[in-house]
Image (cartoon, rainbow over all chains, first blue to last red; front, side):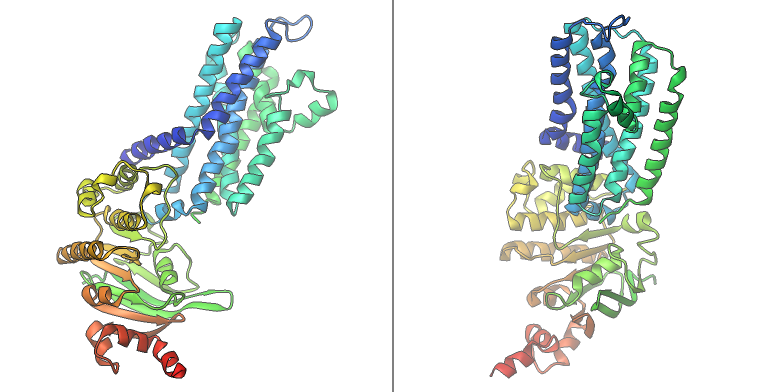
Length: 247
Length: 244
């Protein structure tokens, strides 16, 4: 517990000093939320919809935070520690790899939650946003999506032989999801072909799940996204531990 | 009595280059053992294989009877390590890296008093990246002592230190030796080796050229001091003669 507390506090301080994670994980989604709100105001999501565009976009905008921390912040921090041989120093101490992964996981989780809270505040204060769906269900969906996206990030960090590959892999996973999962470019306005392609991205399914829960729509046809998130999380966490390397 | 370190037939090659060839060393508890050799002789590779950082091709190393690869957590609870090149997290402060290191062990040493001993008190709240070479070196030795170790590995412990700082480090290590600390070190400075080490092993291109007490090393050579004896063992003397 002492180890976790000290590592966690120190890594949080380092993350704040570094700023990158805060800019891309929090700053970006908040700015995006403000722009979305100003452009779309209280327009309906589509003609005849019962909910506004803003209400519908909430799950997507907070997903930017999950993606930035889980597919960039988390894996790049781990790859950087390996590259700088900081992990090698930890190797000759009693600390377990799971502890190091957990600390990075929690630090990034905090950034992501900060993004969630700030986006909610922006929407609620300036654009009359009120979550129609159950807050509890939404949080559960959010945490499930976060777990599965983070596990992809941890797997990327574990399988990359060096920092360059890690960078490349993270970009290869992050940017398609950033643009085509509906996080930034709304899924609803995509042409059908692009939508079909977008459906294979895990974050697309995750955003669908968060949208449905935040709008309070029936979750019956969400079995596929839920199963996908769970399977991804289990597989990727196992892979990330199996392939964890100190050097 | 349980040995601090038992290395048997340790062999490691990189491709066709044999970095360490059949290394056999036993270090008794409370002993200071020096691993000597020129750059590229295999000192660092040996230490990395002993610690399990690199995988040896053949042979074994047991630290207090434990295999560091198989029993990492228990082995390193009482082992301190200073690598030749130490890297730290970006933007981490001296006191923070000490706190983090101390948090990894069940019964760590008091790092604040170590900071005073190693003359880093004024640097406590500075970024590690802002330290001078000598200050960083002292910090890396200090961190290796935070576990309150029974065995400490020091790879080039005083490289980059000024004369005064070297004396301070030596004195402190000798004090810890009195309390039973075992030390495995590498060094390029023969005055340091002469002052600190009980026994030494001289490596040349991965092969053991000499192993024994410092006094034996001198007695078995044509010289009366360790530096000349070392150069004679490690083959520099031949070059000198050829050049004449």
